[in-house]
Amino acid sequence: MVLASPRGFCAGVVRAIDTVNRALEKYGRPLYVRREIVHNKSVVNELRRKGIAFVNEVDEVPLGNRVIFSAHGVSPEVTRTARERELEIIDATCPLVTKVHQEAIRYANQGYTIVLIGHADHDEVIGTLGEAPDAIRILDPKGSVGDLQVPDPEKVACLTQTTLSLNETRRISEALRQRFPAIKTPSSDDICYATQRRQSAVLTLAEKTDLILVVGSSNSSNSRRLMEVAQSTGTAAHLIDDIEDIQAPWLQGVRAVGLTAGASAPEALVKKVIRHLNDKGFPTIENIGDDEENIEFPIPADLDRRKRHRSRA
Image (cartoon, rainbow, N blue to C red):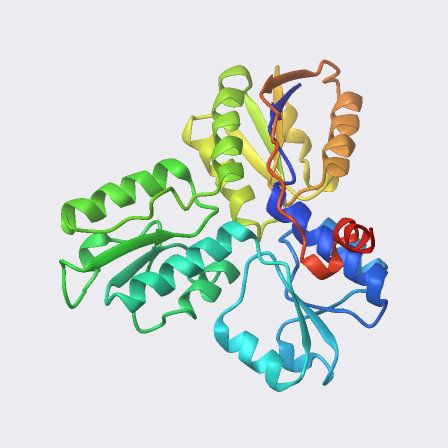
């Protein structure tokens, strides 16, 4: 068995989960979260057991209560509705998603048509679209650049969902540049550092194994991309939420199993899968890659105990 590093929680996910737990500690219940705080069933179920209430839209939150926005971000319309209902907003949006929102606003204010590469039904893309709906054209990663219609080919900018496949995004970006030579791109890639590093680790994992299991939920974009990146090498790969998803035929004839986890999947689940694979005859554990990730995103200031302690000093 070979484990990929890095794997599992990224800084944005850690920040989002810490935000919920700290808000629960400070305010108690009721406490509402709009949509899944991160796209992982295990994480959401654990928070439900603590008494967190998850809602689809803010109009389901009783007037005057507290609502937490998920790591994927929301549109301005969601924020307006929450304020109209006099809700106290706690924003757990990943800072890298916030960066994309800010770029969308900037380009729209400058009169650009924005090509947003991403999945139209993903919470992150829906939130970004809401920042400038008249200016944004969503381009599915499997869509055709040739179908795009823009009012001014000289004023086009490109943004991406943060959890896409790095190689696929590069391919689309190059196609966009061929179609619109003057296209503007962000100063740095929108694909987040965690997504890039986990995809790179999976490519290395594929060289050493003949089956890769990706721990993550089916609605997790970054987890699905890890599976697809593995499959693109010709290695068999499957996305699993838990050990119950592992099918015995997958393991038949397999010499080495590779294991990784999406950025919203907890390490406890990975360890559970390791124990299961040990029992199935895969005892050896080899780590590949570099698990050093020193990035940390601060939680909202009013929930940060350290800042409150310093303020009393």
